[in-house]
Length: 401
Image (cartoon, rainbow, N blue to C red; front, side, top):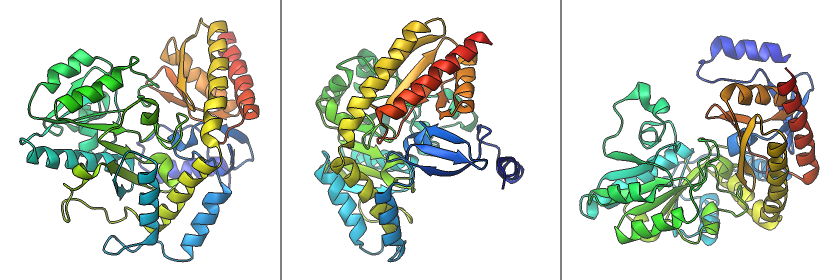
């Protein structure tokens, strides 16, 4: 089959709700993917921060096949070894006491909303949730209601009531809303990925933690994109000097399989009682077995150190390119293997992304004028150097056009 046939068939029968690149991928290995004509691409999208161990990692393959030969699904009416093992691994390596499994980031945030409101009802009948402008938390109705981009919500109003938005990084703005005794939770991302890899001011998140503690408000961290090793620690909060009350995970947790999770301290988790929340497919043995392999591999194979070392090098080299091409590159932002390159305008960013994939490097355009770079955690300096070479040649092509 040819790429053109793959593209034509999906365009004919599928919903047209995605803006796709004109590339049909057939296979992948490590940091690389191939289309149906055999063209090779360096995958620095990782399925939008999903394939953190790259493609066809031997540990994931082994776990997948082993579990496939045992049992794939049995529902949460029963206990499974795999679900308990992954829950234990996450608890032992985080702030949390308990884990609820689901299938996606949106579902994890839906669970967090329900838990926060159920806890709030028992603590002064609180129900309001504060979220941040520019934040992205999913596309289901509840998670969309706490997503701080009007463009995602505009056609689906009215949204879930009781949600207030504050400017990301503005503590005074947040403090004013937090004085409302009906607020039960604050939810935010340690780094806003979808918004263009945006960092808050230094110390802001730690101050938010103190504010939530002083005001008896739950702090929910959405680590769906930045968790599972992407910033150089297993979870981003570990580098911030505090712990959240709840944390949502997904994307890379399943190594390519649908898997999400809500982590919580026991005093909050106990509010989700039998019948108050659930998921038919959540926590299925196949996703759990693969998820365990993902976390174990990241911890035991030195990948967190690799992310720090190679990520620092990558960002510093991109900053050199920014200085050299300041006419079109406005700023480089990043930590570990989540990197944003902001261009002077959307046309320029779009053209560079196009040249990059035409020249063999896949990246993501986000918020119109930003290129988001999400390498697999296994990426080496050699692959970064290849990407940098393509990046510079693509900048040349755009400037010379």
